[in-house]
Length: 438
Ligand code: NDP
Image (cartoon, rainbow, N blue to C red; front, side, top):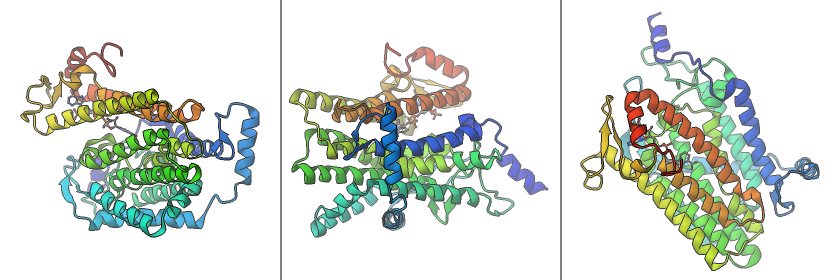
């Protein structure tokens, strides 16, 4: 009786359901997987790349989908599973800095192995060795089998989500119940499966959420981009300036994410959200399959920019990346050590909770200047793919919605946490994204 009360106290029933509950969750699952399918069937070397608006285009998509005969490819599934296992192996064997995560609501702190960048370097040396032994062939295979690999990642991500959902019901010591996500304990199996029931599912020492967040998907995205650039070279005899403009910034972004791996430990994904289908699919399938869209398109439809356009896009990418990186680093430096000479001159307010909020520097310009930099950086990659089709601008549209939603969630969290201090902060920093505009 006593232990049941302990479990209930730690894991209260979820009352508010985001995404309009189980119906919305189902719609998101069906909708996002459909987007991957529709974008493939309406943007490929056979169909060309046009936004499907007319009924004839939809008829063609449906016809292609019906004629497609390798939805489940055992080879692609095997390679995808080996990819995941390879990175899981590196997670354990590559030397790592072990650090504590944030304090959880049961008072504990989990330990995490930071070796994402070293794992990438080991993987990179394997990619280079593969190149020297077999040449471009393995990479061309990846580009040619993109869709089978994307479907394999969806199967893998869904199986993983089912596993973590069922695993969250495992018997645990009564004094130490399994810690569920505050949003993932509604009791509705579809909703909890989608949103993530357990906060930090671990199989032995492997933290599945943390592992999936930055490794198989981010590095898979890099591998796809490299493969599509090689595919373009194989097909046209050169790599177009548009391909370089699209993939170089993305490669920098991936390396940057792994270089600042520690920052992920304080994000909503790790601190608040459970690990369910949403993150499993997002990390393993959505990021590599949809973020590599420009490179996949350019592999069969090269675009050639004038010098002016090339430099303009490069300038936009560099400038926006600097806003994204410098603002995030400034906040991290300030939060780690406010006396650091790099940030000690900045003005801040001290809140009743004890936390300090910057009101000058990057964070004095707008409350989410880092999102602005990130969004324009993504826009530069879409511009790199040119204006022949609006489909390549999918990323900008999607990322706009994602950042708006994220901004809303973060504002709600901060208003709740800081109360009148947040009101004061908003008066001092009135703009959300762009100074003097919005
Ligand atoms: P932020 O890094 O912006 O963190 C928000 C938190 O920072 C707030 O909750 C608050 O936390 C603290 N904070 C807010 N204002 C201040 C201030 N003035 N001074 C000090 N601390 C402040 O949010 P995210 O974790 O959402 O994003 C991190 C980066 O990741 C962003 O650049 C974003 O663009 C990127 N991103 C990229 C995605 C992709 O798919 N490519 C997806 C999601 C994010 P506290 O409670 O500690 O005060």
